[in-house]
Image (cartoon, rainbow, N blue to C red; front, side):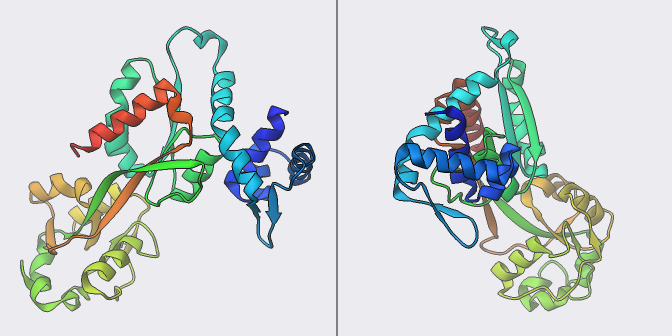
Length: 299
């Protein structure tokens, strides 16, 4: 079979859409459709069911994807290597993940591999973009906060991120003192300005739902799309925020900010380390994968 046809097939299988696969491959949608039809004629069976929105693989399509995808990924890895890299022991690793966690946890953990010759390329992106890039072969590793559903993507839990409700110390008395929120509920926070990284206040809403079984009542006073900048705003007294505990641990220890509540069970978000099935056979990818899992034990 033609490797180009198989690459298109695997991309469609992972993307679940001819349109999305065409975008990822840099082809027109008719070209992708034509290649899939050619492959279906060669196989003698339909590989996809056409749906109102996208496509779904048939049983034959799933079986073919599981057989060829790992080998195709390995071949693409080999052919993508530069000629002057052969025998040099150097490899490139393309990684995708959320900005703050990647900067403060992932990259420091991989730094020793870079000194050993690994060429690291990083994309800072959300879950959907990271998984789409991984499925299409643009990334080798993805750090995401959702369990991937694609059967050709393998994922293992990496780390549980704990969330903290914090503000500058001056706001604590307005919130009823060190035990005010615990004893009287979140209504004590109604008059405090809110700092978030998005208009939807996703972290704040998740915290309120998990801890108070309620929804926040305030619109954000400050929206800045970087949790490190949110921390700076909170430290400077702009208002309260929900932040990952690892991100604000130093500021808490220094007394620059304070916890407004310590719930018995703090809200958590699990990060997963995702790869395409079969690619951990590549030694440089396996080393990075193992190093991240080992480093996470000490986070």
